[in-house]
Image (cartoon, rainbow, N blue to C red; front, side, top):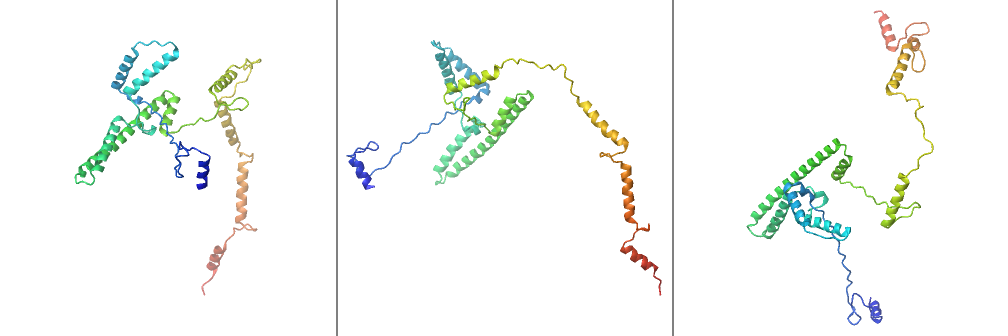
Amino acid sequence: MDQVLKSMKDYRLDILGISEMRWTGQGRLMLKKVEKVQPKRPYAVDKLKNNNVSESFREELSKKLAVPQHPSTIEEQWSLFSRTITETAEAVLGRRRGTNKERWITDHTWKLIDERKVAKIKREQKRRLRSWRMEDEEYRRLDREVKKSCRNDKRRWLEEKAREAQEAAEKNNTKTLYRIVRELTSSRSSSGVPTRSKDGRALLTDEEQEARWVEHFKEVLNQPIPSMLFNFDHETPAPTLNEKENGWTRTPTAKRKTGKCGNGLDARRWKEEEREAKKDMETDSEGRPKRDGCQLARSKKGRQRPE
């Protein structure tokens, strides 16, 4: 390490703005702190379902749009219009609190959460004093109210989503139905496949990707008219379901009436042969019925005469 410091001093190397005259052989490596850019939270557009909030938003937006503006180009007009809407939404609606999974929490519950946070700080400050029991009871009361309010908010939000899904299913609106299902299951399909050209080269710029999409839809939609058209008038109609069912049911019925099995054998003859084979197994060569050992012992014992 000393050799490295000596070499750095000889070559007059500066590290982190420290010159060779100030270098004393002792230093600390300092890395630049990378600041993470926090994404902006979306606006609380759910507040527009409230009539009072929607009316105040409409009035504020009308006041700002009533101010005369004279944009020279369409881009300036669009930028002014979008800025007016975002400023009005920021002032009236505000940003949505919590993560995407906590979007069902209402403003009343967030207010209770803030009160519980303040009560917890007060309880921790007075924990060593005798009067901390009162702050502890207040914190516990707010904690119970927060949990109860969260349960009610989530139940109300799920019921509303179920009602929207039912209405979308009745109207055959599959887009809204699948959107609600994705919201409830928190499943998202990531589309990270790059756009490629015909030769398989990845297109990186937006202009190349847009040109490739235009080329693709031109080839798909602008198809030439076929030279030969097929005429379906001379085709024989396909059999209906009733004709097929009647045809399939007549065949087994006709076979059952003939008295034959499915393999073409006569059922009565097969039963007679089976009966004769069973009879041959039960009789001996002289035609007498066969007896087992127990029957023979009982017959001999019955023929013995008492002495």
